[in-house]
Length: 259
Image (cartoon, rainbow, N blue to C red; front, side):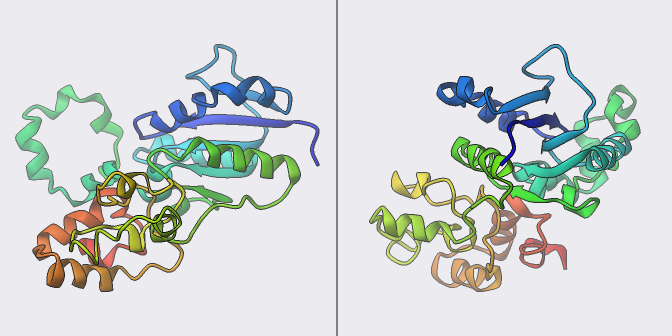
């Protein structure tokens, strides 16, 4: 067991919501600081250090050459690299950009020269694992704070974190929720979505939207057929559902219209 972890929290293309979830560790934070040195976390502290780190949380996906260079450098300077949240793991909502033709963007931004970021952008949203080896995929939009603690504890103990890869349906069963898909024929993404949220949405009568990304052995083609044959969705509506949070994930790529 390590005495203390040197960690970094870094943001790339994302909304910063995952970093906010890290800061929601309010009750645990003071105890955490006895076991963790936060070396780099621009959102939370003024003095930051370039590493090396024992563990780095990287929020967001890669959308520019600068981010790609930073990612490769962080890989070299970090023992454990964590893809922190859905943008880092699967592209999440920003990856919808990958399906938008440039002519559509031009209808919104008539003068692209006014947008500084476009000059250096790949015009694509790409998950971290497409470029570097990722040690831990911490899913969720954002990941639940308990899963952040699990990754930190595993880093201290030198073991693999226990993160749920079974579907949300298991959490629904444990909570004795009625099935919104089979009983009410509503297009719930639970059967193909990784657990970890505690089935928050189905527990209040809302369908799972898939914000924890693909489970370990998802069958999206089968669920897509159910959505069309039993829930009344059109093919375009099904495609949009699978693109929403994980359209760039290989597990969903075919159903999301990517081949």
